[in-house]
Length: 354
Image (cartoon, rainbow, N blue to C red; front, side, top):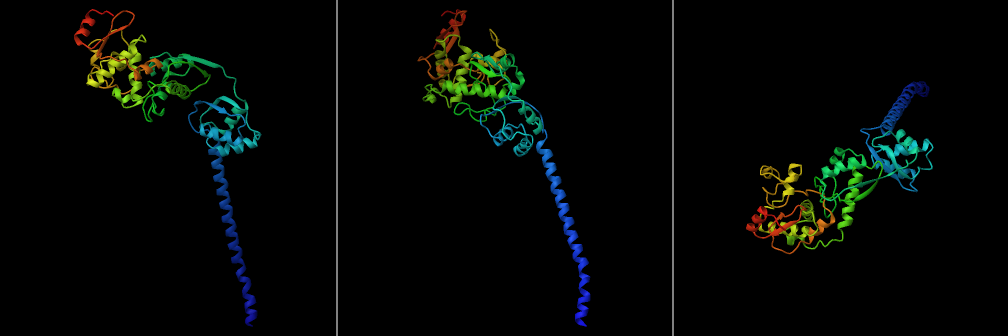
C-alpha cells in the first residue's frame, strides 16, 4: 500500500512544474520585447538628425574604408553614431566605400539616411576663391573682408575669432580670448564653402610658417615676457608706421618708454579702443576709459590691436639703436621725426619738419 500511495501522489506535482515553466517563458518573452524595444529606440536615436544643421566641409581621403568614413563623420558631428552609419551603409549598398574628395553638401547633425544620400552624390565640383587681407586689419575689419570676398557672414566669423578655442604655441597661448594679431595678412586661396574655422586655421598656420625663422632670441631684454607680447608690439608698429625705415625706430621708442615706466601714448591704441580711426584724435578721445588706452594705462595693451605683417614683427624683434622717447608725423606723406627731448618734441609738434 505505501508504494501504491506514493505512485498515486506523484502526478499532483506536474501542474505546478508546468506553471513554473510557463512563467519562465513569459519572463523571457518580456525581456526579449524589452530588448527589441530598447534596440529599436537606440536605432531611432542613432540614425536621426540631432540638432542645428550648420554647413561643414568634409574630406574623404583616398582609400578610406567604410569604417574610416563613419569615424570621420562622427568626429565632424555629421552623424550621431558611427556604428549606425556603418550598418545602414552596408544595407544600402555602400559596402565598397565612398568616393574620395571634398564634400560641401553635408551639415552637422544630419540623419544617417540624409548623410548617405549626400555622399551618394559624390564630392561636388569646387571652385577656388581668392581673398586678400592687407597688413594692419583688425579682426573686425578682417571679418568684413571675409564676408565681402568669401561670403561668410562677418558676425559668424567674429564669433569664431573671439571664441577662445584657438591656440598657436608658443605664440598664441591656449585660452586667449581672441585671435587678434594672429591672422597673418596675405593673399589666400580657399575652396568654396570654406568655414570660419577653416579660414582662421589657415591664417594661423601661415603665421606660424612666416615667423618660424625669425631671430626670436631673448626678447626679455626689451622688457617683454612672451612671444605673444612681441606680437602686441608688432601690431602697434603696424598701425603707427607707414614707411619701412620708421618701423624699427618706433619699436625702439616703445621699448625705451617701457623701460622707464612711461605711458606709451600710442594713438593707434586709442583708435582701437574707440573702434574707429581718425586723422586727428581729440582730448576727449584720449580720455576714453579702456585698458587699450595707453594714454591712461602704463605697459602694453592686453592684446594686439591689429594683424601685423612680417616687417613689423621683424622690427619688434630687431629695434633700431637709439635713445628716442618721442616721435611725431613730420610731413603729409606720413614720415616720422624722432627725438629723446620733450622740448624738441614740442617744437616738432608746433612746426613739423623731417
